[in-house]
Image (cartoon, rainbow over all chains, first blue to last red; front, side, top):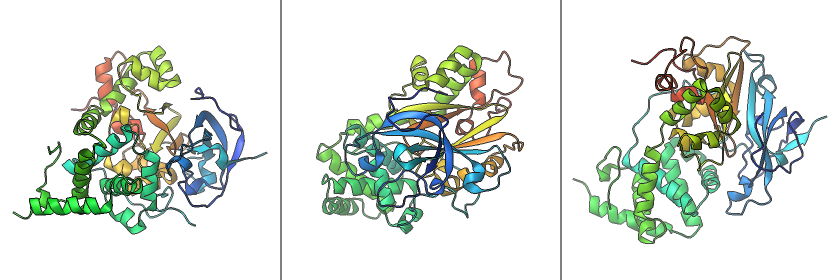
Length: 101
Length: 103
Length: 205
């Protein structure tokens, strides 16, 4: 649902199953700790954006990175939920994601 | 490395959501406007400001109010970019103190 | 050196950081980095942005299915259509609530919020408690705001970690058939567009 904001050069399309990398490195990282290492799926492809990890240090943010809306079952992230259909959705960049079979 | 002090999603121990709001003080409105004006002039990016807050002392991050954190990060970025120096900010502050004084 | 709006404090009582922003403002203006007019324009820009903008968009979407479709497909363009300036947003996405689905928005990492549409976020949205709990206990947060949902309703919590800004389109309350857009807009609270509660069920007093 929804159009891509800009052209997307990333690896994934809507519906692809993905796993968030568990990286822990210095710098300005916009992938929250609670979602690292978790598995979900691509809900939407938002298109390519300047990389905030570089912008944060005064660099030009190139090359752009594809941004996705990634959905996760609540139970995958935080365990049992009162609502079995509940989801957590996070905007995550291409380089933080690995493909899942 | 470890989880940044700003990276609080899902951390346990959070209490009830306090919904009372405080009307903004002059200085908070000014902090907001200076931040936006610097952005509009291309002096700094929001990403740099976020990074500055992530680099703050962790205890200060939790203790300071929202706009205090903004002011601290504005100062950090302006100094980092050599637009202002800590010395001249301190000097200007000292001049204020002597002008405002105590009643 | 003019003072701006908001609550006045005797200057010598200001906290360390409060004094510091006055010092920085003076220096920045003296050096020509920004101007007094820049600051004044930003203050006025911010004051013009309130939840009424969002309420107007939602109410119009409720009464006009074609506008609703345009709003969902391209929220920035829909804003421009009705004279709301959303140009400062990189991108703006509408999350439509249904009887089976409720959305809630947070920025756990800082306080990202659709400011150019809705104005400043409430203090609670920026609080550690909300940032910590919204992703792990959304139903608990909603409960505090008076919203209790059945187990089989799907709660979707969006963490705004990038340049996408989200607004929740709450469900149109029952029994509002034939209402004017203006009256419908009064039911659309700021908190319902963040998603912690539904729209009001009746007109506020």
